[in-house]
Length: 177
Image (cartoon, rainbow, N blue to C red):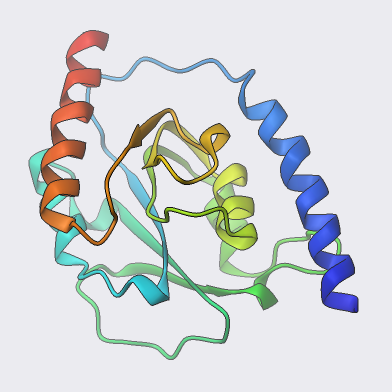
């Protein structure tokens, strides 16, 4: 019962935050220097995908942050990307207060945020809405208010994601110059 009430509070705060996202003006950028990726643990996507994407935009590996969502606490793993935050529902308090590493994440501004989920889960959507990003990339089945650019592909098609996202993001950068 407590979880249901807490989810209701989070959904209310998320809806308010989504309304404010639409009024944020987009900043001009000529290149991507920092990236944050929000991804559910269940997707089991190799982090090499995001390293390849960063290589295409000449982004240093130190400037990539991955936030992995899980229903339970995630055990620490050996990873190539050092800036990794494991996040479960416990990271957010009953009233939507952010705990631990996530509060530091929200203080940073990223050039690119990748919402690597294709549904409308509450926790990743809430985290995404509170991240500061100049450009937001996601999938067409996710909440449209979270993304500036949406790909109508299956997230499991990693090669297609890499080619399409690279193509469209490079186009965005060319238009800004």
